[in-house]
Image (cartoon, rainbow over all chains, first blue to last red; front, side, top):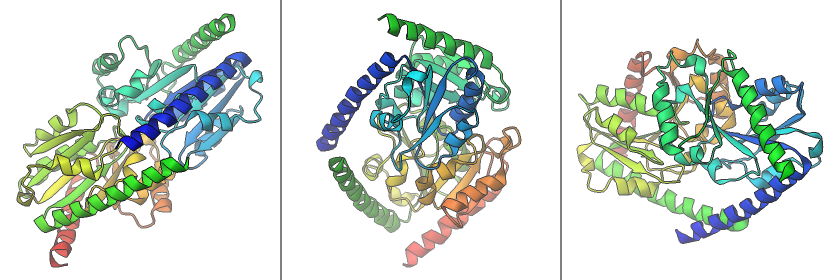
Length: 225
Length: 225
């Protein structure tokens, strides 16, 4: 179906251009943008909830969250007391740069340090769409099985950091940590992997620390660049 | 983007026609076809593994399984000692009728009673593509959260049966059964819901029995119709 491919490439090209413009704008205004991708139910919102609550004392935060339907996640995240906006995509299985830009309208971006974007729960579609983010984090929950990086290689390939979630359930589900790491790195050699449980707090301090380092490092590179 | 919509509608129309032809062929040859859809890691393959092992004594079975990459699932399913074929979709987030038809080439369908099709792990894309199946089953694991029907309504709307998987983990993850049922039925009133654990065997006898009833009832309606 060459016609589809052609149209699709046009869409992606346009998205990439818009994403580059967005990133330049984020850089200019000094806001560091982090996106989260994963399967449905891997725990993006739970991780973000705790992260917003923890970091809001020291950083100025906001979040965008994408779903096909409902504003459940926006309401959950707003409990942290930071600005949150929901993007509902209808039947579309991912966010894109245009939706992101539209959702930011009227927000005072220069008053932010960190903007989180929680993508639609999907291990396929979001991988092709740059949102202008500086850091893309892929979540993999222990309940999904160790083989997901092999079966959804592109999303792991386009990520800058992998976070294994629900690590408190590792034993209950017979999670094989060595195999999971092997699979992540066979798809993306050298990718940093963290382990957390947003429910019990396990690994969360290390997660907060790395988030601070990664955003500071990139932020300063951007500012001096 | 009207051009995309137009092309997409053409693709779906073509898929629907091909799916109807496939279903007519399945009916003629007396094979009942069941597809499984879910998030990545909800347990489609684990459920099918046990199901193939259990039913192969009394029914003639085969399975098709879709993934972007790897033939892991086909190898897992083939351990049951029934014919299995893997469809690798590359970057495509769902199976379609054409892939299904191609994968069946050379198989003697009239020698089968039941054909299972395990779709790519995705709660969005597969909902638009009829594969010619008689029964579409959506899986929801307790670890994903009770809100998934609200967030991915179309896939629940196009399903004939919902199966809540990993029910042995319900307590460990604080699964709220009432809320899950309420959410399923607010999207699809009256949808039958089963609960299983392929790991512990909980609910599996009821699942096997319902599968037998559903395939027999539809099969005989088809034969007399």
